[in-house]
Length: 280
Image (tube, rainbow, N blue to C red; front, top):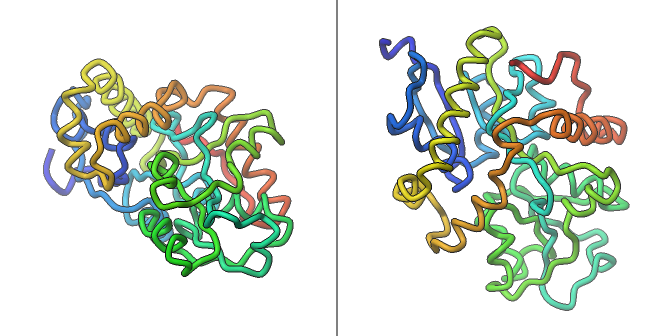
C-alpha cells in the first residue's frame, strides 16, 4: 500500500493507548492489508483535530464525539470505559466543595469527558480553565486554581502534590446511573464505510490481544511516550483503563455511552446526535 493510501491514525501518548496500539504500530500483527500513518497527541488536541476532520481514525473523548458525530462514528473496540476509573476533582487540603463556589477550576480540555462530568456534577456550572492534564496538579498545588479535574495517572499521583480528592466524578456517575463511566473511544471517518470500519476494528482488537499476551514486549514503546515513567504507575494505569470493554463495548458499554450523552444533552451540556453512534 502506498503512502497516499495509508489511513491516518491518531491516539494519545497515555499508557492505555500505547499498550493497545503498540503491536499495530510496530508490525507485531497482521493488519489484513491495512497500512497506517500514525500520529500521537494529547487527547484534547485530538478532540479539536477531529473538529476539522484531520484524521481518518482517532482517539476521542466521549464528550467530544457529540461535536463531531456527523463526520465520525465510534468503533466498538479500543475504548476507555469502566468502573472505578473516572476523573477526580482535587484541591489543596482543607478545601471543600462549598469553597469552590465562583472559583475557577482547571480541566484537561473543554471537550473532555472530565469537563462534561464536572458540569453535570456541580450544582452551578463552574468557570473552567483548560490545560494539558499533566499541568493541572502543579497549578492547583501552587494556588493558581482552586481545584482541578485530573485524569490518567493523576489518580495515582495526586497525593504527591499534597492534594486531596473532593469528589470521584466517575463514582458519582456510577451511583446515579448504575452504569460504567465512558471516558474515551476510537472513532473512524464515516465516509470510509462499514467494511473498512470492521477491518480497522479487527486490527485494533488483534493489537490489544497481542499486548495482553505479550505485555513486556510493549513496555519500551509505552515508556518512550509516557509522562509518568514509574513502571508501577504505568502498570496500574493500564490495568485500570484497559479492560474487557476495550476489547468490545458490548451492550453495557453502549448503554453507558448513550446514558451519559443523553443526560448531558438534556442538561444542555452537549449537542444532540442525529446519526447512529457506532460505525461498525
